[in-house]
Length: 490
Ligand code: AMP
Ligand code: MG
Image (cartoon, rainbow, N blue to C red; front, side):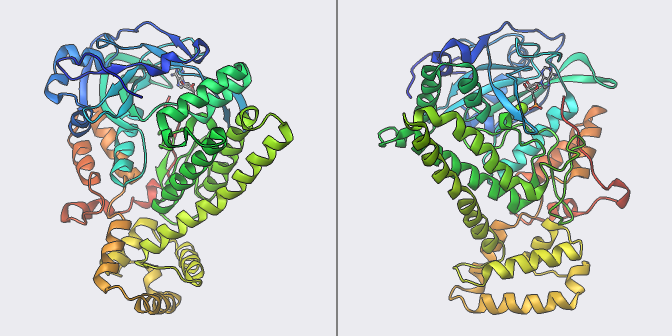
């Protein structure tokens, strides 16, 4: 995909390739102006990598853009159509509170969707008001930026503005709009929408568009749609392994919240696990534990099966053959996931090559962490820093036995102890966005104090630094703040 067009003084250089798709995939919408937009956080680094001038973005007329009161030259102004399986049930959705401004072409020629979340009602809003509250938008800002710094593919956050209006939830809350930056907003749910309500030609257009936008290297392959499925399986397997390795729980892995680019999207009731427990669920609405930590890898497979179903008409003209082809790819998923996860776990333990006993060594350690209710991040952090104090786990005789096995394993590899330690340092974050810290930042922001959040964002921006300033962010919450519960950010 290429594009040549005007660049505004601020650096907006927008293209709208998505609007070349059949009209069924989107609705053109009007702006829904808000009363008095005020910028509360701007991501200078991201702005500059997008080719945007952060100083300009702070000016009143550009804050109007970030609030959706006005769009830059060349903007599209659309809401995207999509469907989705929500907690297992199929339904029609679409952008009910988002405006896709367009695709920003960066100075290096990359293409990113610019989307305003909380921008007002659209034809897909159903009963919703199309708006968002400050707390959940800042939460998405903090956690998505933390994920990016952890090296996990994710949508990012350019800014949050308050609207000067109140949104009515259980109480009246400060209204806000977040600018989200994504490789694209194509979702598994976009394909489900096409398969359910579009023609086969619509579906093919969507698949071709996806390949040209995200996977151009498979354009010439023999069965490009099968190659697409394979790529998506690989991307999701890799992504979900990365979530598991840092203890991230997405919370609502509905198919409309799973991207085709392989980026994490939609930070609603997500959170990072503290005590290691595979059953951990944070979301208040996930009463069955469908999206519990341990279920994330199989749910990824379930979602990919829904995706594969949509692609069947493109995979082969004979339906049985199409099903066979899809099934063959899908059976690889857990295997690919597992090998990504194992590679990541070896790195977390400083292991640089493969041995048959590694899996048992890793699993035994996780069992010990579970038994002694060890904090997931801090345990690996302590091993990395070689500071094994203050945790019940490290005082247990079973740990001493395990530690000997681990040291023996490390002794067997030819690489130096330093190399092994460096690998651990770059694989085990010193800091993650702990729930109580995020809540404290949001609470202060709600009172107009953004310093707590700025400090937290700074600590999270280089999670592998092991700096002195990060130490306080490793503290655990008071027991009264547990168990932690999250709520969908509407
Ligand atoms: P989410 O839980 O953010 O993934 O949203 C699920 C669906 O509900 C999407 O179609 C959203 O656009 C829509 N939605 C969420 N909140 C609102 C709202 N306040 N107004 C209208 N639509 C909404
Ligand atoms: Mg969503």
